[in-house]
Image (cartoon, rainbow, N blue to C red; front, side):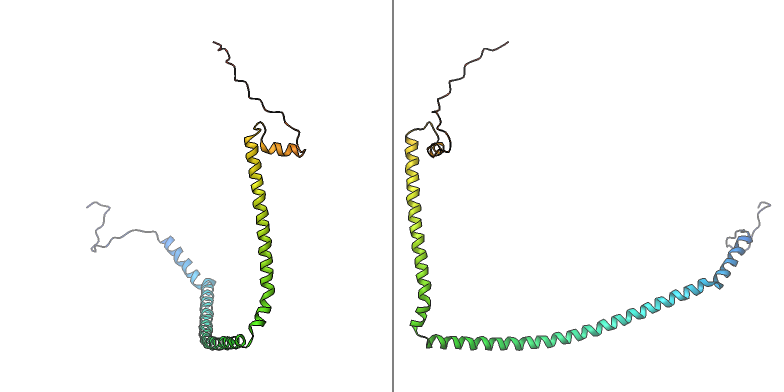
Length: 188
């Protein structure tokens, strides 16, 4: 063993620490324990407890309102069933009344109510047939004219012929076929 070393009988580790910083820490701890921070901590804990109580009151009121809502929904379901039964009875009454009214009314009264409607439909149908016939004739005339134009003068387009005849564009001169392009000499 060296001169500076001392042997201790226990197997625990020991360390030399200056006491001044340790004593300063102890004093600060005492000051902290006796100052307002503990009072602030107590107020903070009181506020947390108050908030917890308020939260519990809110939960209790929600449970009560939920229970009352369930009871109201149960009552509502019963009333909806009753309303459904009443509506079924009402519909059955209307059906029986309608059947009795149809049997009691005469066919003449029914035909008098429907006759103007049938006449109007027939009139519209006749008008549609007449216009369809006119359209078919017009289309046949157009087809014939187009065939005549294709068979006859092909120098002008059919649309330009029609517009020229109506004076919307000037008459065009017949289009002459273009001369074939001449070969250009190659430059080297």
